[in-house]
Image 1 (cartoon, rainbow, N blue to C red):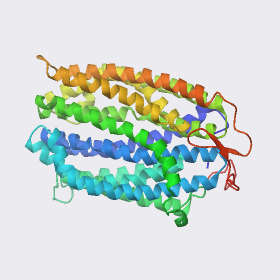
Image 2 (cartoon, rainbow, N blue to C red; image 1 turned 120 degrees about the vertical axis):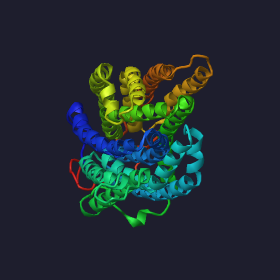
Image 3 (cartoon, rainbow, N blue to C red; image 1 turned 90 degrees about the vertical axis):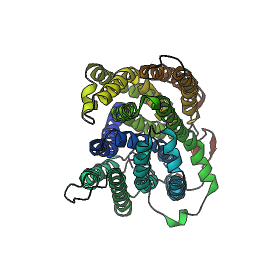
Image 4 (cartoon, helix red, strand yellow; image 1 turned 90 degrees about the horizontal axis):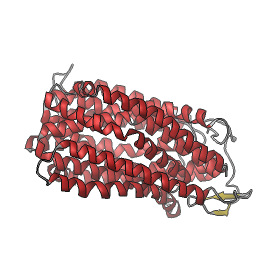
Length: 478
């Protein structure tokens, strides 16, 4: 466990954000590696994998329900020096992860074909997307265990083990992808099925590695079978925080689905260009998201320790760091976006569409930095409903206007990209206003009295006897 209630806020953010960003980079490389080798199979394969990949937002939404709830409650427990509660939350999150994995597999195999058919541009694209998902669904299911264990470590201030595991699994995926997709070294080319299988096998290895880490090295939170019986009160605490955060990703899934549907009439090249561009955009967001992910547990520990000034400072410093990072990236994409698209597709039409998308959408990056940072602080405070509200405002604005634009004569792809820019700026403004309201409501009162605990809703309740025991000491590191 690492104590984040002391020392420089900027140093704490950077110390955590660097390995988080590296881990996220390797995580994103899963799909980029697949996309690189799938590109050799043609536009329909690229569009199919890209369209099917939008389902990842559903899985991300569900994993965020567990991950965000675990980070918030565990980090607050660490700030209170309450190791017993941290372990209870961790083990209950493992139980929920197992249940979610079963539901994901059952629903995924039942609904995949129907879902892909609803957004793919043609029959060939539908076939590619469906095949990819069939082979990647087990990997999706295993993500719940991976995210739960990584989130528990992040809540205690430890991020390097997760980064190392993600790096090693991506190396494995990089070796498996060409062997399974195009048959390098094996002579057996599985095509898009190989892309899904390579990622599934890599995720499975990652889960095994993190499990071994918890069994051999982790001390502050650990596997405790006695805590695996369902405890609905703990589930409610986690879901109160996690469900709104998961709802954010669910809304992003709706957004991506609407975009694919709106641009379907422009053909597979348009969907391929958007698919590549959106994957690159997700990769570009990683440094800003890493800063936000670091800010969450820092805010959570300081909130649990009743240090409101450090919570506010965490937000201001994280926003400043994100402005620097996202400003530099915006300049890069205004200069040469096409070189990034060209790496994944030689098709001039795909390159042009993808480059236009990146050039226009890059004007949202500063606003996205604000959105990400606010979201991280909301998680640390244990109230993610405002973040969901700001996302809902964006979607409620974007969807009807996108449908209206698509029905007008002379509709162009750029109309969708410009609309997205406007709605992201709106979302950033709403997020900032809502966060200031949370600061006034949650940080303006008197700090908790000694011997009390702050729950996920910010109220004070008497601490249970012995709950303040901190295994290993306040500054110990497992």
